[in-house]
Length: 108
Ligand SMILES: [Zn+2]
Image (cartoon, rainbow, N blue to C red):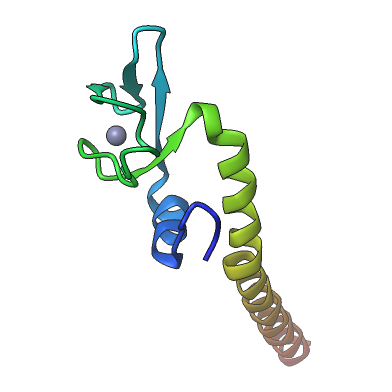
């Protein structure tokens, strides 16, 4: 579990569905990347435990914290998703290559 309380489900959702980016203006009004405005009584999405956008359902990224979040998500993604995916890709590629070689041999 990461500092932001990201679960595998959150990461999968962010990777598969993309994220909704929330930006706060000087008046404390938040604009979402799905083109909706939102206000909080106090604080922002993070302080109010908003993980998913109530308008589009995507995982929320806060512009202010984006860099930290992105690096944290990226780390988790690399560890949890990219590495197994790359292993799978390597295996698949090896299989396809082996098939290709086998077919080439047959044709000759
Ligand atoms: Zn949204």
